[in-house]
Amino acid sequence: MNGRKHDNYIITTQNGLQVRVRRLQSDDVPYLLEIFEQMSSNSRYHRFNQAVDNVSEEMKLREAERIAGSDLLRGEGLIAFADMPEMPDVTIGAARYVCVGDGVAEAAMSVIDAVQKQGIGTELMLMLTELAKAYGVRQLIADVRNDNEAIRTILHRMPYEVRWVRDGMFSQVFVDLTRPKLQEQNERGVSTAVS
Image (cartoon, rainbow, N blue to C red; front, side, top):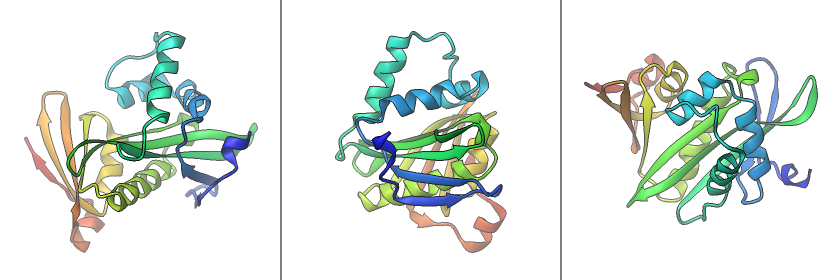
């Protein structure tokens, strides 16, 4: 498929998987749908902060079109592909930010279950933060379920200060792209938490 040919970055995972990453394009809707289909109920729940297993095909298509169709002034995204043992050129993840205010953008990310816990989410988020920063974003925000250990681990690995504001089962997360973590904080994965 020609939408997959323009890879900009190569990541090698902890398990040796070669991941090709490029910018998200408006014609990537089918690839975003592939990611959704390859996520478990639990992964979908943590990504969308609600149960989304019984969503109509039309609703999935509209959401994928919305994600892929953002213009450069509002946001940017990345999409990742890898050759899996059973099939070549599988869409394995995506990360995106959307500007919601002056220098502030909301970030989101998905990685299919088959390749989780290999550092792909961390690498995608690192790439996304640098892309956002290059476009003038100073702060990334996200609403995260407090029981989403995967995203908590990823955000603790960010080289920027991260602040968590807890509210019941969720936290609002603020990643300050203007404030690098101190080296000792980065090594320990320390972030600021506010209850």
